[in-house]
Length: 258
Image (cartoon, rainbow, N blue to C red; front, side, top):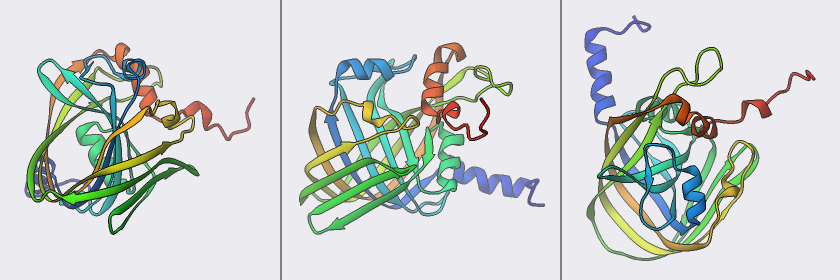
């Protein structure tokens, strides 16, 4: 029965949940310097800023063994939890509901639905993320040469948190997760880029100071992921950050009530 899974069906589902793989993957990335004040303001409890105040933006197209084909974009900041270094995902955009539900419910990724484009023309790439009629991210990169195949490792911090059923606060403490990625790159090109950010009350990317682009590039390959919970964050401490990751429900009133 589809509404109640058998033991065999559960085993098949959990094999995918345990070892998600994203292939083929095509992703453009750009890093820019921002202000220490901004990083301090958005870094949640349980994490500390790491290194220079840099923000990373990515836009990509992916196949997968878990949520079909989708486009995705991230905005993240280098962070530390004890001895663990990873990028804290500030916001994330996906093109399909499968990709949203998979990463949000499993990893705690702060995903929202948006339209994306990634146009590759020779040595030039143009990427865009649009949501609610606003182009939130607009980046262009001029690519250099391919440095060849490579095996790389990356990691992200995400936070799983649920609003309380009565609408006040969180249901329980938030869970800090660590997602780790093994990346088998077939194309790895550096480059130079430019970036424009815009925002809305729901997606305030315009509040991120963009001081200087410090790196950019483009990769193709296969990404394998695994994730685990590494800590808890008290619900009351994380609440302002939890609401900041969601749309502003108070700004979506179409009832006409006073």
